[in-house]
Image (cartoon, rainbow, N blue to C red; front, top):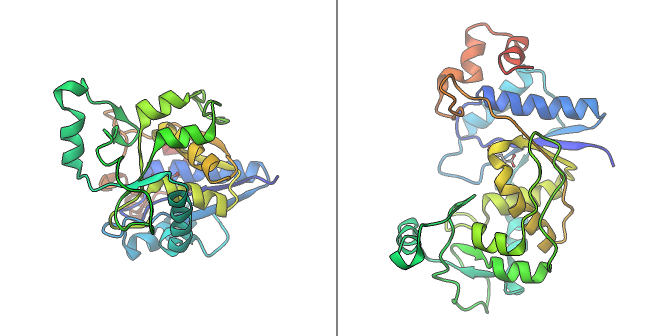
Length: 281
Ligand code: GLU
């Protein structure tokens, strides 16, 4: 099996040093393994994604010396695949429509009888308000959630785990753990027939990714991805979650942090070698 990995930025702002570290780590690992590095544009957030940021991603990565087969996969071109997956999960009774707002969820999750609200990798664990909605008929419009208890029942008693080659040890999450601490995650959003979790899993499979290399901020999302892979009969790649690049206060860099944008360093005359040094290669 040849090594295939990807870098999957969202075109919602300039790439910064953290992105450079992630892209270079994936690219170098692919080179070392004689494999392939791919680019994927994660533009499901249509309100924040911009073509100019997408162009800048290509430009910055080429400047860094990275190379990938064109065209890059773009999530906004993948709607039929996401829809087909949702259709299939819906017809198996694993999804339900959810009309709760963030506020409804926060209120229900912090009701006195609920104890302290549980925070999962996707924010507050969904309290299940809409779980009883009918699950027959055509795929409903609007937000859809995965019924995690049903999903775990379908998958049987084996723990959820994966192969991790980064700094942390892969967890062994029990079915109970998935239900109680992750809960009914969103698989389709009101404004887009898909969600980060659904699209990332389908796209990694479509791009035949053998190794997912990404920041450790996504470590806790990985068991969700493994559950979705198992439900949809997709292979589970190996995972490598790398350290995050932080600012001098220890805070992880964000898109709005223009001072550390690659474009700023370029404009100031930095070379790709300077960037490698700055992120600790
Ligand atoms: N699009 C995600 C991000 O920019 C990365 C997703 C992934 O690598 O799985 O943080």
